Length: 131
Image (cartoon, rainbow, N blue to C red; front, side, top):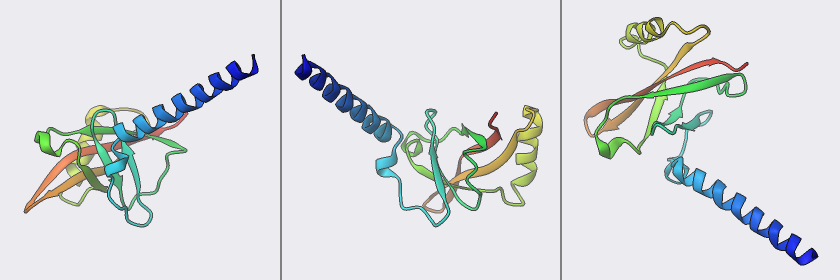
């Protein structure tokens, strides 16, 4: 009887470990580039992969929501560098939040990809208080 329990536990541990590896792979963390000091990353099921720079990591207190933009298929799995909006982008960011009208939601970052000489907006990230 003891050997069946041991086998069951081994299968459960291997299954749990395999599932964790699959989620890590699916989130793209094997291909994540080196991150700058103080940065943190988030991978969304909608395809947005973000490295947040120059913003505090408040994942314990806030939930982050990613809004991907339409990009060519070859850019969908790329890790984007995300930082607060520039002065030129600020009016659009404020309008995005005003149009959503969600209590407690705040605009966090714009995610950008540098593709040769072009700058591509990959997505936007907002956050809400974690209750």
